[in-house]
Length: 399
Image (cartoon, rainbow, N blue to C red; front, side, top):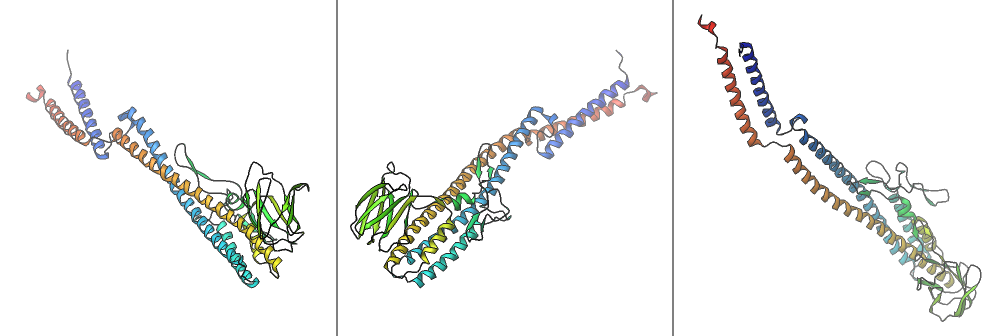
């Protein structure tokens, strides 16, 4: 078969082009450090690389979410710490005011300081982050969630929303709490019932502790303890039905009925009444307002002193409930921070695994690539020399 010079030249040029392409491809891989620079290099590996890159991008977003969540929860935890500090200082002041040696003027001074702490609590309830978003407003972040109405009462204008951020494929963490959950829903008294002193009492009887001795026997209702004489009493429910009756022995006795136990100290007078009613939920500002009013009440005689001490004692129980509620809220925030720590560790470990896998699939083996490049360059040089010599094989050079 006859082979023309043009056919040989085309075959040589095709071989040279192929050798040059292999050299350029290897040089690109060496310069980028990647074995797969385009899907055509290895379609299967390219698909796996795309999947691994997407997984790493998700983890990076989860890490950014976790950082933001940590900052928000840190601000909330700091605010709650300040709230607890203010409430505990108020408790110290209330104990001073409830001392028998404190005069009316002393209690008025103490009430004024409690008002300052109440105002500080209002400012804390309206805490904002660095972007001006209110921490305790729920989804309504733009406006202050707590405001004072015309009657001087603090009202909540936020909603019940709780923003969450995703920190893994299947895990979310709440980054705020609504003001309703933190500052509004605080149970009165012992959480089951509340004790109140009648403003018309004339004796020196004071309410002590109220406890639920038998929860199964407790029937939620309003009960009135009335002293028929200084040493006899009866208990009636809201329907005026007689529940219990008995003798009272001063100076202190615990009255028991429908699973509740109520301590009474001092010497009640005939006609004095005390009320036991089911616990409701109040906001912390209402609790403090009632506490301030009790501390600020003038005392002129023993009956006044008994009413004030008894009322302050019961409002102190409400304050203790508020402190416990805030401590629980802070504990919940701390639990979320611990969850962030745990998930960030898991995310970091998974990211290391993904990057290792990605490197094995995508990165270049430099030793093998450089050796191959040397061979390809040698082959290209040999091919170029062979082509140059083949170009000179013609009889016309000898004519």
